[in-house]
Every structure is written in C-alpha cells, then in structure tokens.
Image 1 (cartoon, protein in one colour):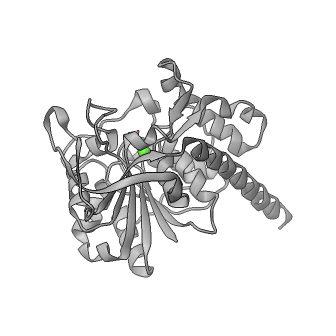
Image 2 (cartoon, protein in one colour; image 1 turned 120 degrees about the vertical axis):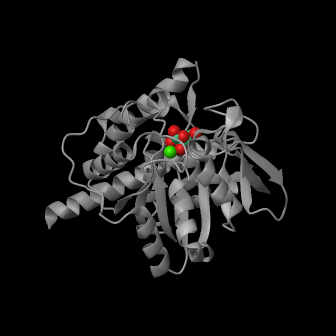
Image 3 (cartoon, helix red, strand yellow; image 1 turned 90 degrees about the vertical axis):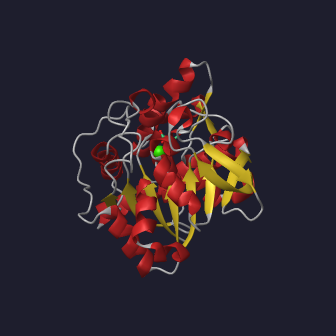
Length: 313
Ligand code: BDR
Ligand code: CA
C-alpha cells in the first residue's frame, strides 16, 4: 500500500517512521509531509532531514503548514526538547525538503495513484487544507490513521490531547468529512508503551541503534521523572495499527471537537456503528513491544545490506 506520512518529528514520530521503513513489502512511503506541531515547521522538518541523512535513507520530504488554522504554534520543549527532537546531535545533513508544498505533493501523489493511506502523526492542519482545496481526493484516500484525541482524558489540558488541541479547527474539518479514519487515542496509547530497559546496550551497536538510544533515552526521561518504567510511544501506534490491526480493539463513532475554552481540543466521541471514525481503546502491549523490537532488527539489516551494496558498487 502506498502511504504518505504526515508528521511533526518528534521522538515518537521517528519511531513510527522506523517501523514503517522496516516493512517495504507492505508499506511504500510516497513521501513525508511535515506540519507545525510539537515544534515549528522548520525545526520538525530539519529533524526529519537529519535522521534520514544520518541513516542514509532516501525519501521525499515536503513542508506543509507553518501554523495551525486559527491558533498560534505552541512548541513543546518539555516533552520533545528545544528543537523538537532533543537527544541526538547531528553534524552535517545532505537531505533537504523539496520545493513543492505538502498540499500539492499530497494532491499529486493521490492523483497519480489508485489508493493511498495517510499516517497522521501531528496536528491535522495539512490534511484539512488538502481536503478543503481538493475535496475530490477524499474518495481516493482509503484511510487516515491518526494519532490524536482521547476518550476521557488529556495530556495538554485535562481532557485534551496535544495533536487535536494544536489545531482543533483542522481536526474538526477532518472528522466532519467523509474520510474513513482510525483514531489512536491517548487511551489506546496506554497499551502502546515501550519498556525503558529496551535501549540498554544500544549504544554499542549500529548507527540505527545508537540513534534510537539517543532519541528514546531523551523521550523516556519524561515518564522516568514520574517514576514509570515504560513510556507510551504515541505515534508508533499508527504504524502498528496498520501492520497489525488484530492487536487493537476499538469501536466506531462520530467525533466532534471542542474548538476553544478550557476544553479546547477535547474530542467528543459519539459511538455509532455507522460512524466514520474507528476509535481505538485497547491493544496488546506485549505484542506491540515485540513487533517494534523486530522492526528495529529488520530495518537495521536492511540498512546494513544497503550500505554494504553501496560500498561494493
Ligand atoms: C502527540 O503529541 C506529540 O508531541 C507526539 O509526537 C504525538 O504525536 C501525543 O499527544
Ligand atoms: Ca507527533
């Protein structure tokens, strides 16, 4: 299946991308579109360029929205560091975004292909802009798998999750459309955790493992400070749902969004079997972690083969 990854990297965005890259047999990444979210657009785009460049991974990166539809950007330095990807320090970067805006890149990719799926790992600004400008693409988007929203709790306000809070107006446009959506909520992410100990020993391994260590070591700090021994890796739930839907549970609903006030970004879930949103609420955490560890190994082998072939040629 052809996939566009719309993201604001972000530690967990990168883990979601690693798992996707590990499965070229079922995921063909047409490109990455970036959106202002966890940090400003240039920062999150640079983070992705740096990661792909460091690992020598080819990919098209296209920059999208510089800000949410109505509100101002709100970078999240506590969770993600000053530049949105605290932890690793990169030297040189030889990957750059293309000139084409993300909306046009998405439109062209959708028109050129039979069907596509979008992984949405940040605020829904780009996706809302796409379907507002080109409503005819809605029928060609098989599904949008979104990390965002919650059933009853929050991580930025008491009842609001960050990606939906970041741009509630765009989220409303997307939920109100006829798009087929899967929503990886905060609640399902309670079952999408990685144990802090998994990264022990990663620094003595390949570039992929070293980078994973640097990214997750920073990311895990937030939960460690609360005394937890596992962290939810939110965006990874999206790739895992695509690859292993059988380990997830959820129910269909229509979803509304609170646009302002103390509940800005709260998702209101109206369960209904005809709803366009599959709201995920449970997953098998053991399998989630096991599959991720397997994906890292797969990707590591792929990168080693690719790099040794390049040396031979
Ligand atoms: C979401 O917010 C971002 O900081 C993460 O990358 C994830 O997409 C979790 O609420
Ligand atoms: Ca994200």
